[in-house]
Picture 1 (cartoon, rainbow, N blue to C red):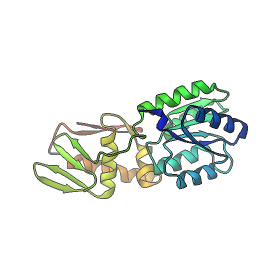
Picture 2 (spheres, rainbow, N blue to C red; picture 1 turned 90 degrees about the vertical axis):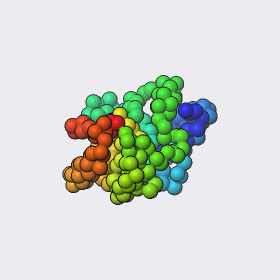
Picture 3 (cartoon, rainbow, N blue to C red; picture 1 turned 120 degrees about the vertical axis):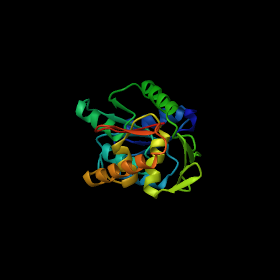
Picture 4 (cartoon, rainbow, N blue to C red; picture 1 turned 60 degrees about the vertical axis):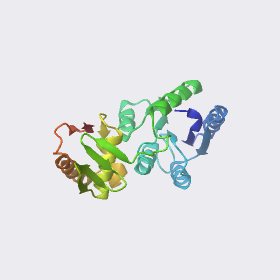
Length: 230
């Protein structure tokens, strides 16, 4: 993946640092837009549909970086997020990673180190590439996301929109863990008890739909998420 395709949203309330990072990243040939607080960053993200990488300070005015990241990932679950912070507390790092952060960098930091992390993350992320795949082979089944269908030997099962969304997230990360928080935030728009129970029901339904092929399973990684095996 070519990191030159990056279009970064940078939200940093320290304007000196913000301007320095903006100039540095632009010197590397990538697009960068700087915002000064969480609310401004969220509004800018909503207006500009081209961002494909996030760098958020944690301690932001009006809306903190964690909340901002949750709202951004509710719209684009796979967009990479790097947090910047002056605090090195384990609890903060765990919170960031639970949200789905790709990295967590403690200030002060070296700009070249940040760039190396951005390049590494962009290379392993398929978000920047245009998502064109809508038909997935799941064992003996064919899953057509656009047509909400699951087919086996000519028999077609129509899925609900939400079932298809959950299944697509599992298919895109086949054999890897998809976190519950990521699914809930992206599809339900919230991560609470009731949404969690609803997700459990959807996973149970999907398991039944795949009963025609015993090689397919949806593993429950307790308190973490799910893995589609096939």
